[in-house]
Image (tube, rainbow, N blue to C red):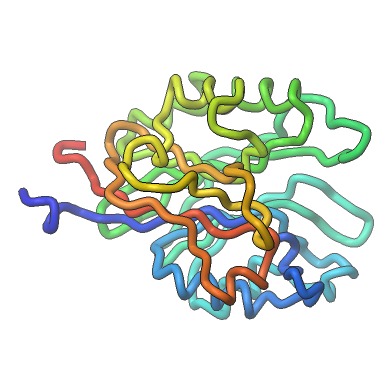
Length: 252
């Protein structure tokens, strides 16, 4: 089978910063427009509110999914008196939640956020794909513990069922200890595609850091990886989306 006829999947990870852009304007519709620009099959989003007063008491993931006409699953990482805060997976295809968990580690004093991960099975046109979406903490020790959990047998058992994608905002640079741990078990798409540039995603005003990542198992082969830096994406959030075009390996 030639490369052009092999099954293909386009995925992205995108920290949407509560849908508040660099212009300090909140717009779920603008985030949906950026996702539409990506032309992906599924996208993992981080930093979303659900029914919170500061976000107009809307389900942000639901609003974005409705704009796109997609399926979605929201995973709470923190509960507040007025609602929830967490992340979501949005997909053109039906999904089924497999597991979720609060991540270990004590958050540093300057960012008392609790963290979570969610694993969903997505029924795509290329077959069932396992997707894990997460957002790691800012403390060094908590990130190490969180990376260890996500590479444990419990979570990586999903790889036995075929293609596996782990994506999110890892708050970790390439070469850091959490990144090294993740890379021992899965493959960072940045390292598998020859191209110029460091593919930095944060901040959008002047990208300095590659902290958003997409990891895959051997059932998937990246063909293209890029940071989506459209004018709309530059203003919609403080992170740019990271996009990967994946080919399904024959026999996977």
